[in-house]
Image (cartoon, rainbow over all chains, first blue to last red):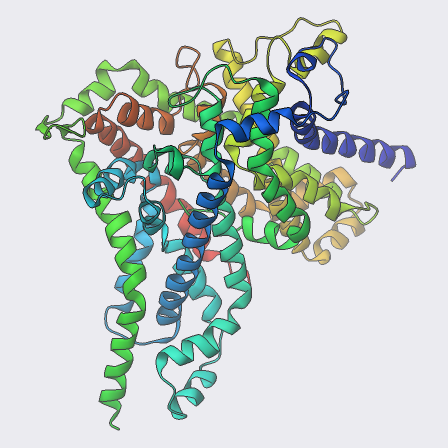
Length: 276
Length: 296
């Protein structure tokens, strides 16, 4: 491997890395510029002064804390429910014996054949019938369990040795205690991955809240982008620094989380397949 | 205690445990899916009672509505445009990151992966600004090397290209990580044997490594094709389906027909067509996924 060859490769990879990171830098830089400076030609790389005006602008028009609250409630609600329901079912499929077990499992898995776009209209109409449009329960409940989650939990729990469970049963533990005290702790890495994956995906979810929520005070962070971009429900003519400030607000928590939890996030997010 | 009643207790516990999960899936996944097929045979605007329409919606989609089949075509172009680039670039990068002389593979792969953790909508928004024809920095760079500024999101073909660029930028890291883990699981035995036979780097890569990662390749190909039919966020933010419906992918069109044009019956019919296509694709995907051994 020639020295120059390796150097060229390093250079190319680093250039690509800059290209990957540049939009993030540009987003923050733009948000800190004034509306005039943004259109300067040639464009300035760094803002001439740290102008937080655009962030104030965003918070005047949109209730940012409320957006954060809604998104947090939505993402955590779905994550907690998913972890609980999917691990319960996963444990049952992995270690309990009951009639029609395989049939039920296949039935559950079959739900993955139906992607979200197919269910979108009917789920919306169903929620409307329940009166759950523009509510937290409407946002959360339909995602409280996924076949993917159940499948994953079953995979993770199957290797747990029977002996552990039999010993606990002999000691007189109820099934729930066995699940709670033995199965769950043993499946902790799987739970962590599913949790991270679910939370991140729900935090970033755009189409679902777009369908369910139209009231301003129930919107989640990604819908802030929809509001700023014009489109169907949005405002036109929002200045670019303000828009980029909005984008930064939406994106920042995930970046912070990624920096601290890189490895777990990468592992969890590459499980992605067939959740929707 | 007789073994019969132990089994009985276990049975009831089991049903209790699977109850919440199954109920959610039944009520919010399976039943709506079937209702969707059902609604496809009606005209329904969400307010007045549904009117029976027979096969009207389906004939409209296949014969009368050019936007309908166009949306399938766009989805196909989307996957054709993003898949090869991501696949080969991802594979090449993974090879490099895996080389023993390459330092910082972990840092670089984390950097490449970052866009994928971010809301697609938010990051598309940033790209809107980057690609702005008047003031976007990409056109500035083009101008400073003497090229004409490009009206990225304003012209039909270019708009689609812009969406492809954003998608490739976002998803590259995913492919890198997947291939990296596939590479790490190749026994060094094979590579050593190839070296003994006098294979060059190039030959080793193409004739030994590439065939050995074929399961990963198959997996991502199917995943990418399926995802093409779900593309929504970036289309909404970047182009809203335009200009002139040139970026109107199926998922976007289904949403638009149902929630903007309020033609819920027609939207359901399109969704049913989509369903049939996806059923075929998902069957392949799960056959593969079940064969893949447990990750943990």
